[in-house]
Length: 479
Image (cartoon, rainbow, N blue to C red; front, top):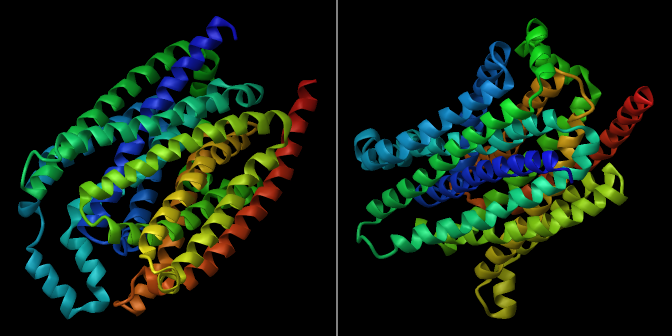
């Protein structure tokens, strides 16, 4: 590898690492906070009635920013906003929850008197925590799915992507191991420091937020350097020349609907969003039963994160050989097949929890939580490597501005709508039957899970045909 290419690759890997470190710390914090302080059942209501509107609003704002500034400046504005929000939450909102939130007795009374509206009342009664969860969800999508890969797609050709994307993923996902070790260290530091449960939670979140903010500032510095050194003047000039030709919000959405190619990418992202929400709802409910305290839940979540990192390393090595010796289709279809197989097994085992306990004379909850974690480890390892690499490669043959704004529309709206659909299914059942929990709806979730896995596989197969036609056409023109 030439020295200039080695330097560029090292900088991109460092940027990926710091952004993923932010993402993984926030993911652990937001999931642990909502699941233990409120309930895993409330997540479907948050995603449907809060995440969707804010996600669409963010996309509108992001599109407006892109219409007035370069993607590189948009990167810095968005990352700076997230750094500021998480700092304000951990050092201002969280220590003063009793001041900002309604009285808990009053919230419990309303929930009891209006059972069909109880989850909406609970969301209002915990709006600070819900807001943290929502922006945490936005960050996990925006940082890497949109901002990082837009930059990577801009400085790499299709040929470079096959060489270096597995390398980016390999080194980038090592941060999952680093993230878990950071969380272990923080939890151990405050394990016996205070008797107050809330005070310990505040200290844990504040220290993690300091680390998160430092990673954010470092990512801004690296991105700024890459912008100056490797975003060519031709690209910048083209951005200025084509500024007036940028897609509006309406044009971006119309482009997705009118492009069969983008629609197939949309359904990839959409189907993944549905499937992961259906599985995680049940898994989190089981994990909370076993780990009711936030520190215990964070430790368990960090352990799963550690093994996801190890899984990612294995899949990154596999991805390098798959991209080299196999087709795009093989790389893209592995993830939905893994989701379908392991996810179905997890649902079935959960459904027969009581029967398993009678047969083996052992508490099945520990087995189910282990299997849920194992499913997450293998599925996410494949998603973060094979799925992400193949999806990002599918954008490279597209022209600007569709590559930038079409990607933002597909990834953000598609993933949010997928999560909304995944949330709507349990939401609808919990609204009709307020006393139900996830254990009561396992079979219904399994049916919908298999349906969307099938849509995922169908979309991969059809996108493969379109991708091969487009890349072959471009290669023919070049030759």
